[in-house]
Length: 304
Image (cartoon, rainbow, N blue to C red; front, side, top):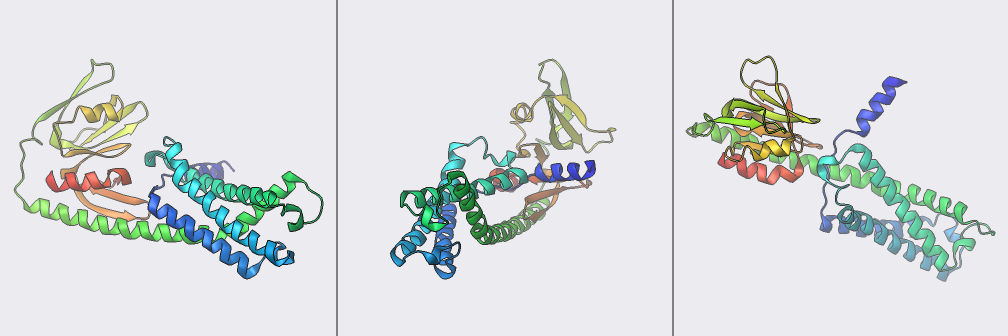
């Protein structure tokens, strides 16, 4: 049981890519609203067919419209209101699931309020008004109908992210090969860099070019080098603080909330639906590239 809970916890906390695009999200909302309208018009489930013609078409049109508005509000406005909660570096599978559940709840609530306003709640089911029960029924209806567009958008988004990641990974790998064919400028990479701990006293000197990557580790950072040291050097500091100390070394680039990578040490890039990963020369560990850093990463790589 504990192993299953541990596996579920790891899955819940697994990093997930997040794409916030107002135009795409508006289109998703509109198409989903149209789908709801067409679905209800074609199948007329949950007692819709029992309503008189005028009310039936009013309900079908209204449910399609309020579904569009509720989804647009959730996809476009909520992430911009709750900016801290919708930062890509903090986005996980668990947050993705909760967001989907919120969208389904918002649609169900919007449809319930619409039906109540047009006095169609009681004719929709059996006589006798019980608000909590009817709200639960509307949530169930929303979940049943939402299953199809959720599956479609999930598969479509995954396929789109995969194609984009594979294309970008190929471009990065080609850029790495081109960079290797150019004369190497060792002026910056041969310089010493001194990283100061949070207390301002402890200092650690490195050959800048020997650093493979720097990773966040709680209240510390781990500096991994190409040298034969027994392991990474642990420095008590935030990654952001270390990043500021590397301003004079453009080839040491922050590509993720938890990683700074040596662009000159990249062997190749690989892509998946979760995003880009970097393979470093002489290492098995893969370094992720967050979507928010991807554009700047490619520009820096071409000039590093």
